[in-house]
Length: 141
Image: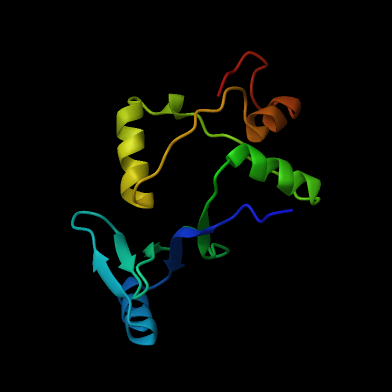
């Protein structure tokens, strides 16, 4: 079977001390790490042109997150399950955002030119919480 993941399109590094981490990654890899004014987030640009972010850790177990560019989210989810993996959130509808245009703009800024796919139906997370009685049966996430 042909590999479905083409590349890491974005990554996030979480740290305890932002200035120390900025200096470390800049000196180690020669990355350009720039603070975004008015936020607690830094943009990273690698020498190879990859993009990422740096921010404070929200919890002590938080690790680096990699975002993969794939031609089909549905195909990847099927392949993950076929290989014995588990898809926790197969789709994330933007109905929770007040404006889908803003959501698309945010994603485009983070992922640098992306296409959003609206997948209908409840996520795995909603289904599991409903089974556990944590949310009402008629709740639509």
